[in-house]
Amino acid sequence: MNSVYKVIEIIGTSDKSWEDAARNAIETASKALKDIRVAEVKEMDISVDDNRLIYRIKLRVSFKYTD
Image (cartoon, rainbow, N blue to C red; front, side):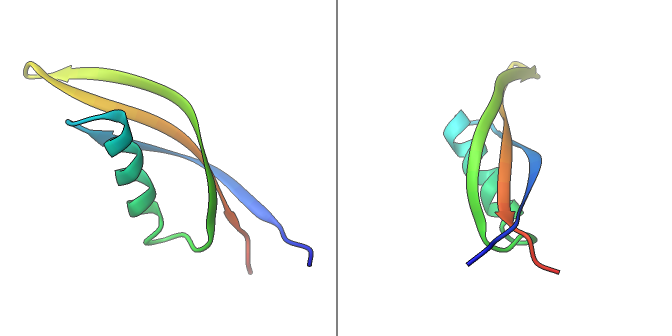
C-alpha cells in the first residue's frame, strides 16, 4: 500500500523535563492530527522564567496525509 506523510515542527514545554515537554507536545498535537508516526527531536533548550526552569523541545513530527 502506498502512503504519503506530512512533516511539521511543533514545540512542547514543561517545568519538569524534556521528556514531559515532548509528551505534552505529542498529546496536544494528536488531538488535531491523526496517525502520528514519528517524532524526531530537533532542538532542546531551557528558558528561565521567574527563577523557574522551562524545558522546551522542538520536534519534527510526521503523520499520515489524507485528503
